[in-house]
Image (tube, rainbow, N blue to C red; front, side, top):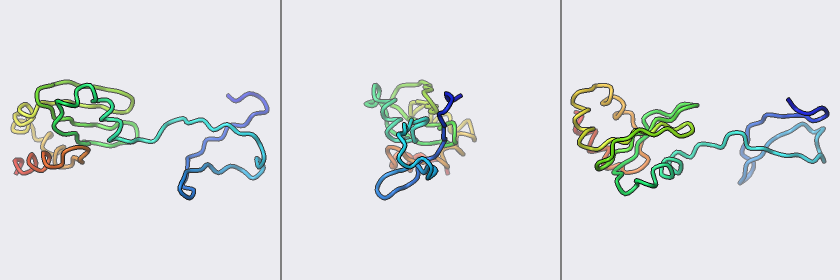
Length: 134
């Protein structure tokens, strides 16, 4: 709850020239304001590479499986690391390529997820995997 005499406005930043801006009522013209960032925008490529930076040399490709408002599911294909990570609204499955190839043969849900996947890093690998699905 805001302290007495103070107003709280929840607004979404909108495009404003080459920047972003927040529109407020004209009655606040000349007032001193404080703008607080409640939830930063998603930058999936930057965020996932930062999260995977300690093991990036083992990563062959990174792909978006699902991008919902609250949760982003990422598949990272590695040379030999098998791990699951959760940080903020990111859920990252790190799977070795040989294990992924074996799982594709056994699970049709994985095939469907890979068909819809969007590239973050290494489009060539995803293209090769999609060709092997058919």
